[in-house]
Amino acid sequence: MILNSPLDMHLHLRDGEMLGQVGKLSAESFSGAVIMPNLVPPVDRLDMVHDYRGRIESAIGDHVFDPFMTLFFREYSMEELEAAKPHIIGIKLYPAGATTNSEAGVKAIDAAEPTIRRMEELGIPLLIHGETHGFVMDREKEFLEIYRHLATTFPKLRITMEHITTADAVKLLDEYENLFATVTLQHLLITLDDVAGGMLNPHLFCKPIAKRPEDRAALLDAALKAHPKLMFGSDSAPHPRHKKECCGCAAGVFTAPIALQVLADLFTKNGCAENLQAFISDNAQRIYGVTPPAKKVKLVQRPFDVPATYGDVDPVVPMYAGETIAWSIESIDA
Image 1 (cartoon, rainbow, N blue to C red):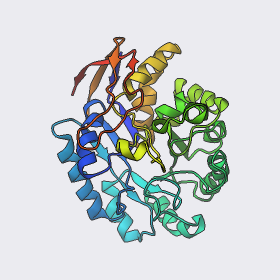
Image 2 (cartoon, rainbow, N blue to C red):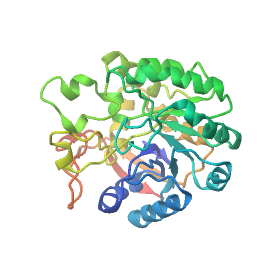
Image 3 (tube, rainbow, N blue to C red):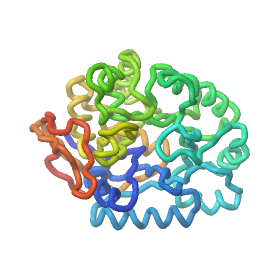
């Protein structure tokens, strides 16, 4: 199987030593990725975008990889947005406190609307972590009304529902022309039962939390059919092992090193191998109007033993740690 210029449309690379550990793992096999801005402090100025991009480029070395940068949502003037537009792929909105490093996020959508209006005028996409602060299994479903409000109030604004987890969100994709979505690897594979149905598995705990079997089925069906408004976004979110295997477990699943291999297996097993290219790259290129660097990744049905951890400084545990998966990357031509 050959994948051309695979893209990860939602990626956490962190910063500092962690960036040094995980950056190359995405840059090796992916042609580009949408980089999340929820650092400490958040990336909410153009100079911070430039500085962070520079650190990413230093960390990935010679790998052919385009980091599509984002700004952390706050109130922006028209002048700030005009200056930022050539250097970013969009602006990421986090409800305050909804997930890791989101304390500086938005507390009320109506207060955010003047900036959103300016974004619409300039054609800057809005990327949203769509959860309320309600009961954990209902947070995404409750947020769908906000998506409806934004889609109708700002009909020319391109809105990406990040890491959708419910059948209701899949249905919403077809209701509004300006709504799009990303979905993660883990949400195509697991339910809440895998996280907490037996012994708690902290390395599968993420936000939004995995949902019900019927939600997973709807997400998987849309991905396998390469729904034209759905893109792969790993939300690969590395945390040191000691911050996952502890009280107050950090939210995030680390999938960067195994995402393409597992997707190849998943699509092939379901008789949809021909749709993986659209899901992993073509849809995103069309939706965002990007042309990523050329890269050909050849995958083969050969067992791959997933390491127990990645990195020496603060080891990170990947999904399927210590297990053998069915597909391997045979070669990368860039």
